[in-house]
Amino acid sequence: MPKTIKYGFIGAGFVARFHLASILHIRDIEIAGIVAHRGAHELAKLTKYWGIGEAIVYDSIAEMAEQVDVLAIFTPNQTRVAVMEEIAAAVRDGAELKGVICEKPLGRNLAEARRLVDLAAEAQLSTAYFENQLFMKAIRIQKTQLAGVEQQMGPLSLARSSEEHCGPHENWFWNPTRQGGGVLSDMGCHSIAVGRYVLTPFERGLTFLEPVSVNAEVGLLKWGEPYWRDKLLRERNVDYRQTPAEDFATGIITYRNPQTGQKVKAQFTNSWMFDKQGLRLLMDGMGPGYAFEINTLVSPLTLFIADSAAEAIEDAESALEKATSSRGLLTIQCNEPDLYGYMDENVDALEAFRQGRDAMLPWKYGLEVTRLVMASYLSAERKRTVDLTDPAVMQELESYVPLIQQGRGAEQLY
Ligand SMILES: NC(=O)c1ccc[n+]([C@@H]2O[C@H](COP(=O)([O-])OP(=O)(O)OC[C@H]3O[C@@H](n4cnc5c(N)ncnc54)[C@H](O)[C@@H]3O)[C@@H](O)[C@H]2O)c1
Image 1 (spheres, protein in one colour):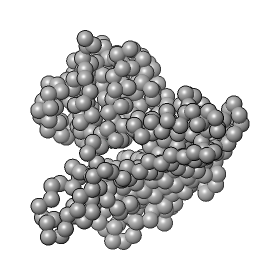
Image 2: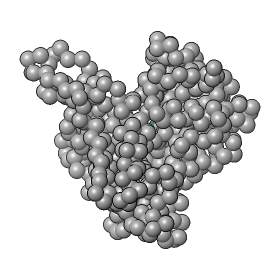
Image 3: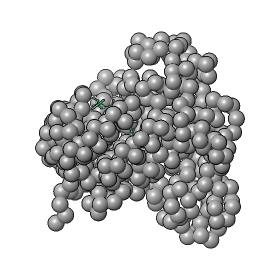
Image 4: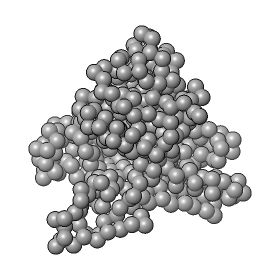
């Protein structure tokens, strides 16, 4: 019988709950501890209720690190480096960890992401960068289903990937100096990773395709308008007059296949101004003579609730992430942790840590995603195509902090 691996969660908010719901369906992971400023006791109660661990609430990462095999960083973006420094110190003090997980993004900029990679290497920890969308069953299955066609006809040459919803659930996401920017930092990292992954020929490595250039734009299309700006100030305590972030981002990244020289393109689009049913992931790919398409708002289950019955509706968000309405024609997804890939990424990390190796997506991969996100901000800021083969640009990106992240977004967005 394989041994149960003990996990310690750092953070007990929205994403921690998604992971808990995934782990419920996975054998051999036990939630042994939780450290969080807020929500730890509620999550511990749910963990025990679901029978997936004792979930002892600890006061510090150092204490919890002594009692678990794996630490999972599920705290806000601005805490990444400090949290990882505590983990590295705990290892130096004798904690015997098998691995460490970090939710996307690895860092708010390249310097932070690199610091995380270095700290994990110094502590000799196996790593898992949690980019759930690469583990979506629909993404994986289209790849295997189309492998034969691809071999005969040639690889995909165009990928389009988007993630959109009506805006984040916690105040810190809206604050560009804390979160790292707006929707490009928050969700562009997903869509950029998906685009490169789906274009990558079958069974080639994650960084096989070489980035050539990026051309991106960002905009503040909804939340900068007076009515919505006032609402943000009232409800989220962020002033988009002074320190705005982008609520829309789009761009095209060109890659080169190093074996054939073929150029392929991945377009990403992200927004926090998607006023439809709730979260939508839309991805497609075009190859010579074949294609795929994924739309997570297409579900086998829809409900209709008339105004006259709307008072009786259950909480809308228990039916679909970021649901915006509780009446009318509603899309329901019955197993979102599975649909979005959280379950499969947890299975992958568990297997990797058991075998003493990095997960499919190590932190070094997260660093590469951060590089492309930063290049996209640079392109939008300078209003030009950024050449990703230019060593001077690569050097500049190492220390680049986007204007929006610096809190100077008004100079760019208005
Ligand atoms: N993969 C995805 O699609 C996805 C979705 C949502 C969030 N995320 C990522 O997960 C991370 C957490 O996001 P969330 O939505 O769960 O945020 P959240 O605000 O809902 O929860 C954050 C949790 O961390 C705790 N916390 C904050 N600072 C802490 C610290 N220094 N030490 C210990 N605990 C601390 C909070 O009390 C809370 O329990 C973010 O990096 C976010 O980008 C990923």
